[in-house]
Length: 358
Image 1: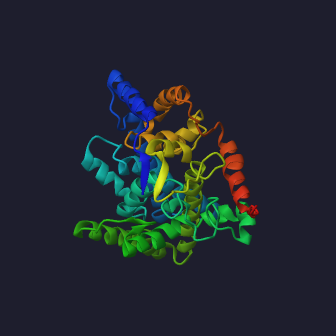
Image 2: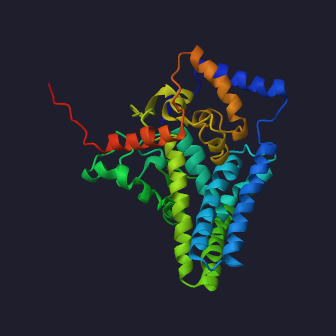
Image 3: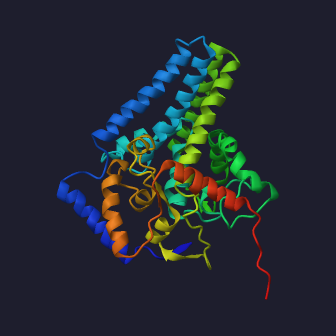
């Protein structure tokens, strides 16, 4: 599948402005102390919550549940703030460090190899395109795009979306990764053949995950450990699903239909039309979600660390205004959630009106 052109005149101009920003300020496009501080925080939260559950487990039920919820949120926090940058090569100028840190995905049960093909290639190229973007594929359980078939139960999808998203993480590590390993496909995009090292790491980390989250906890807690894992996996799934869907599955974004295997837009304009920023002036949201609320900026500049997105946004907004481009954005988190995302789910849940032939 091809785009009408790779770069528009606007984006060529914007790239120069962004490059000049980094040159003039003599700073790197990769992470800095802000990213390293977040790395320490999220990894500390991860290890503290895990050891608190395993080594000195509390006896009160509410404390156990709270720790499981915190541990599940630490998975999402590490993914958003640390590994996501590393997988894009923007965590550090040191490629080996990016490679090592990106394998924290594997430690969390998600194959880094599959993620980079699914996310960096398929999703970042074919955003919101049916059968290409794996992130909008729900096997018919939900209708996220107007180009997907409507089912009668979709009328309730705004109600069951959150409970269903609690299964996302579980399906990801045990179904989607293994399917991709077998079929070597992400949508219609081919996955390159794994070499022996990648194949070893895939199975090594899958087995290590079973040891860390099943064998050891069951030895300590017995079968009740499975309940704790489900709590952590559920809150992680809900959090990941919500953040990513606020960036793409909202009323303001588009869902293009290719014509003759061609997208009638340049690559960069396609990113702008199919992504949405939200709550970019809320410092807490920015800090917690690793800049994923600057999704328009991220899709235009995926190899720049998220700690620079606020500065780049200011440059981009000037360019968008000069070139007359629409900027998809929700000012608040609540607006993005309820009006943007759940409003879109409600719209897509309604039975489509079929136009009668003249």
